[in-house]
Image 1 (tube, chains in turn red, yellow, cyan, green):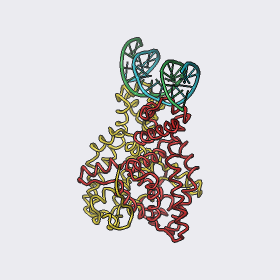
Image 2: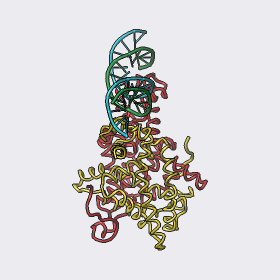
Image 3: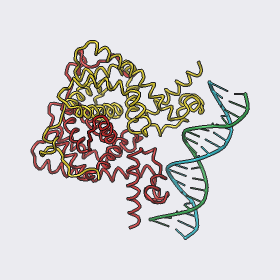
Image 4: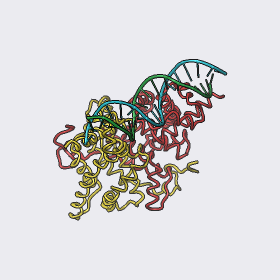
Length: 229
Length: 229
DNA sequence: GTCTATAACGCGATAGAC
DNA sequence: GTCTATCGCGTTATAGAC
């Protein structure tokens, strides 16, 4: 089927190129010539570059959301409470299930996710929040009882700190691993990074503020006179 | 002095615009018109857009590196060992000292740092590593005895996980705070985020892998058959 | 040092033949 | 569905008057 081939070739090429260079830095000319299709094909099949970007995210995230949903169903059926690290492993397992064990593909996935946060002029973030918000809420619903000592606000921030740790390091995994190797000679593959990330995120998510400094009363941390001039 | 004015106006405008939209998404036209200077001024004073980007980072990081160096000198003179959270506060204090308490400026700083990792085609990362590597190494030299139970490799990864958490969340602080506020009605300023980040990073950095899974022997975490096709 | 004007090019998107 | 050709625009960078 010629059409499907073309659409997928475009998606494959664009996905890799966007992850590598960013959206604005990747032209339709580069995408179509890499994909071996005609320049006009992107506009014919997707309508615009922006729509192509959304299509890539949907192709990435739809099956992942399904896999996570399935895992969540199973976890809720089992009905035994899960620890934070169990939930992180559930997530990791879903990613592996959908995108395989290829380092390039996982790295690319995380790069796109990071770009969605920084480069998207809002159009993507809103779209993704709407489309995958319910799965995310279900996940948080299981995470909630795993750390009962935290307030909702603690949990919100700690979750995003952990997300940042994952996105940043997995995005740059190759560069970071190269840096470490040149210093120590030790090679680190992406699976090892994930295995380190899980305990980091787990203990980070459990953390909370010293109550004294949280109230701004004691000497701990910072307590500024005034904000955002 | 007319020249210095022009140069600084360009730097101010470009710094804010780059942080807000990214490098490729910000044109010299936008920069110069925002700065109220002529279109040709960037090329006259800096030579190219790429050189302008480097100049912005140098203006940002040079005084910060000085402030950190000064703090490190003082800490080493005191000669009492510092905990991880002390070191993170040292860093935070330096940032506040140099860039003030403005939320916009700290957010911008972190955005630029994040962009340097993801958007720079390598030219920036190499340059910054060379210019500020020694300060970074000194900092790690103090961090090292604060977590003696970690191997160098543990410390390397945990440090970068923590860096990712900070860069990601502070970059997107406004958006995240808005998200939280629409859910809970609670407002969070950047200082509060930093006060939450410090315990998160502190306990994350201390974390380490379950030895069984680290060796790939036991059932913990993931142990994949093969890697990066 | 600062301006206007413009060169030289790459971009996204589209029209229209096949 | 795929192609070529091209439009219209925005980009970085520069030449040359002031």
